[in-house]
Length: 259
Image (cartoon, rainbow, N blue to C red):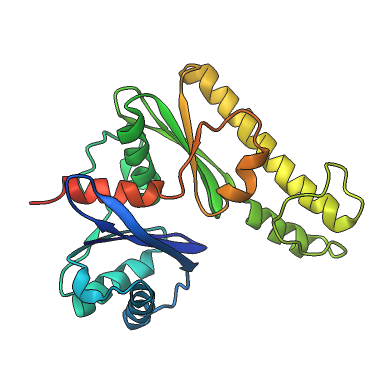
C-alpha cells in the first residue's frame, strides 16, 4: 500500500493507494495544516485515521509527499522513517516527473502544481489546464506535448474573506457558502454573493482567455478543497472536477521513481 500526502497551506490531503495492475485510492482524508506539527503528532494522526478503516502502519509499504509548507516536509519524512520504517519520497527538484518544465526558473514551480499537471496530462493526453481551488486559486497549463508551460495565481476565496474582514471595520466575517440570491438582502448575503459569484466569474474569464490562446478543445480540470463550493457557480469553464487529482499525481510520480 502506498501513502500519498499533499501538504497545503490550509489543508493536508492524504490517502492510501492499493497498488496493482489498476491502482486505486481506497481511502483519503483532509485535516487542517498546522506548520508546528511534529513527526510524532503526524504519526498519531495517521495511525488514528488508518485505524478507523481497519488499517495500521504495517499496511503501508511506500510513501510520497508534496508540500507547500517547507518545515513540514522534514516532519513527514521523520514520521515515515520512525513509524513506517522506510524513507518517504519527496517531490522536489531532483525527482523524475516525466514532464519537461518550460518556465524561466523550473525550481519555482510549487510541488502541488507540478503534481496536478502530471495527473491531468496522464488523463487527458492533450492540452489541459488544472484549476486548483485552495488557499490560492492556481491555473496550471500543460501543452499537447506534455510540457508544463506555466500558470496563473490569484488569491483564494478564504484569503479574500479574511482580508475583507480585517480591513473593513464594519463588515462581518462570513463562511463560504451558497448565496441565497445574487442580490444580497443583508450584509452577510451581499459578501457571500460577491465572493462566490466574483470568483466564479474570475474562473470563467481566465479560462476563456486561456482557451482563446491554447485552443477551444483545451480540457479544464478542477480540484482542491474549495472546488465543491465554487465550481457549481462557474458557468462554462470546467470540464471535470476531481478531488483526488493531486493524490493521483503523487502516485504517478512515485511509480516513475521506482528503482
